[in-house]
Length: 495
Image (cartoon, rainbow, N blue to C red; front, side, top):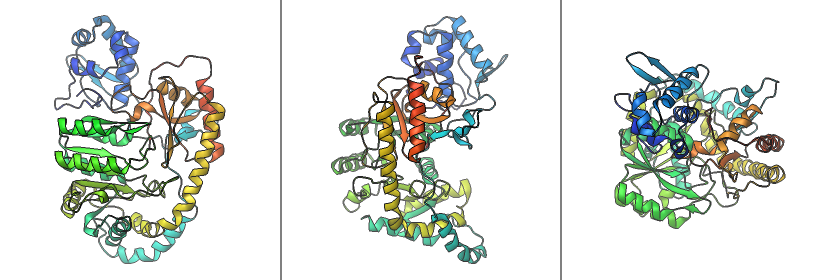
């Protein structure tokens, strides 16, 4: 598939026209062998061309991109030398990853520390998440410990989730204005698993889906892995383009739409109530499942926490809405507890898919999550106060070190969506890596290849001194006097 969608065909082959459609316009305008090799490498690293897929024959690709066969041969040679393809006489050229590289979505466990050899621990600005609140996990573990032996006497399989935790999540939705019964809740191993289960149940390869553009990078990865055709709703500093969204829904009738209306990742925007109503009506009219990601809904810094989008629908008017969330952003990403809220029938169907994948979730994680859910209203004010301080620290650092960059202050969320003023995001991220800073380049959040090259997502989830040092290093990389190219050599995982 083209236009930013993953190529993962049944016969494991990508045609020359398919590959040409994925290449950036500037590469097609001047198809040199190095720029062509760089572009194909980027497509492989970003997951837009799957691994172990056969590339077009040299002569066919040369005709498709308007280059000489010698140019294609040299590009393939360069890709072979760098380990991104392998060739075998009689069977063609196939994509792969070189030793030591990780596919998109596989974060370096040691964080940014792996980038330098001078004992610099590095600064990870790719992950928009905080460490656990001081003492919260210890207290939750202390609460869970005496209750675990009773559960340990059972087989331990709870494919729907622990009943008490399902009740706690349902009660939280009720307090926020969305009537919910425990049987409408499925507990998952985080929101990413929740989304993957929904996509697996509702979509088949080739189905059309709709997402915001930009959007959460790991959700895009899940859609590409499922081989879906992706359309987009533009999200800019001015907000959501709802007229285009309604028109796209009518014209393409997508199977599923995925949105982050509450402190959108990466822009931080908050969808206005009238646009939520329009989105509800438009998706209902086209029979499109609407998946609402509430993972960041609690991170309300300057406004009240928004009500669930589904709560705005008239009675019976939100059966097509599926809401997902987790404790990753409010508490800790290492606690793999998320949930799906949908109709009871949908929850039963999702659970059958879940059982085929991992049988059940961790009972211990869910038991620890119970007191954290109960304490959420009391623990969040301090969490939010800390984030406001760190957001202001990041703003001051950017104003001091990179006054030419611009951004809009979001009313909530965990990061700034920074405009660099020129399309050098990927090159800057690469150069910053050598200075020990890991950053989410804008292109990772775009539906189409090569988009948002003028943007960086910079979280304010680190302490103020680490944020300032990270921005200082970014500024040094940006201002070092050497023009930044627009090449990408390394995948960057983001959360």
